[in-house]
Image 1: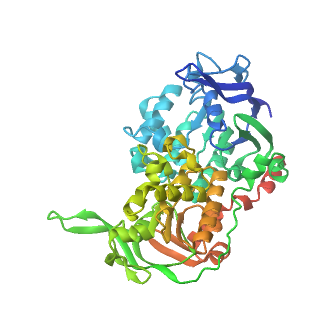
Image 2 (image 1 turned 135 degrees about the vertical axis):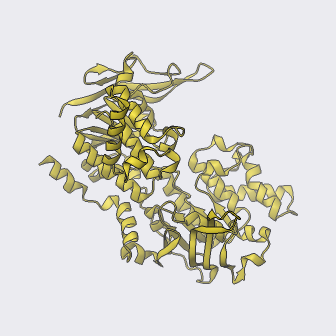
Image 3 (image 1 turned 45 degrees about the vertical axis):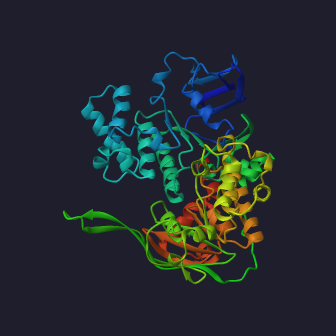
Length: 540
């Protein structure tokens, strides 16, 4: 195969307002061959996305800059500082971004946005461009494409929006498709569908693909070759099979095995600390002229569960299955029908202050859950002021220091603000804020989904240690079956607000009874897919 894209000695730097230059990508070189899928992996900040953006000249020049030796050639033509770079964008090279909701224009119908790039590069009439856009929506697997053509981005699911982005990127049959973290924001089953779709399109359109991710086990499913980036450098590259059989660098090994966090056993009593009976959360959908509700949406539909002290109940399911709504109801933050009992006492009989001390929540996105106007001392101390009013200042500071040490942070960060920390550090701060009031139950709502795979593994190990030391009960909400494997003693599988399967973790993961559960586990088991057999077939 010939080299379609050739990158030599690429360095990328940025200038700040003070005139200080700093480099984020440092003298990297690699090639992309015709018909090849190249995986680029590494943690956030490793330089993956800026490398991809530089190919299409999408960096904020002149604040961004390249060294004189830097070169990006497509079919032998230099792209850096090319005055005709726009003809390559969306034409020869298409791009799919990580978060489709941010990439699609919310004011325009999705079909019109696809048709726009067709008209621009192929000079077709609006009528023919619309017909081709509908055809592309059908090709990417969107049901009822004619109707979806007239839909706005907010009317589509995350998986559908990502398919629209892919349709837009392949509209002009590009030679190269750059997919920048296209599965990160998606459920595991939808992510597997997107990967299968990219493989199908690559074969049908004979495209080359650059697939960017922080999860090496996802890249394993799709890539022919892999580049591993760290701190702006390529530290290892090679065939996918070689990287997994014999990784040379310690960092590569840590990425490969980051999701292998093992469940630890504890010996706490099996007393039930929280129980729900026929728990239902519903929202009005339709009302009569007189305001009487005629139809409800059942976000949680007659669910009964039990959580044991010192144990973890995992709640899994796709987006919209009712996981978070269930967690909010158990914490007394949603109106509900049915009953919830804390140590045998109906939570409606408890005052909110007492209940919220016993049950704390750690949210999915730590950046949005921490007040940006408060420093770390104020964020953590807020709960102390509510629940320990008689505690003096010295004891408060000592309590804050102790909980920070417990989550692996130093107490010299108290004067800093949330934006000064990494995602993993912010999540540790959010956990510390929950622990400081001495709860007995933690509701963990997707606590690792916004984190790199290696950082997520660290958070899971931290949560295991905290549970072992404190004897806390966890309600662990996620769509990540690897995280569930590391944390859960029992698992409840949710779909459309109902429990479709409830059993011990070992029985659910090893012998799932329901088709829906089987599909979730199959989609998550990327590591177990026969990629070596696929490589052999391709070589033949």
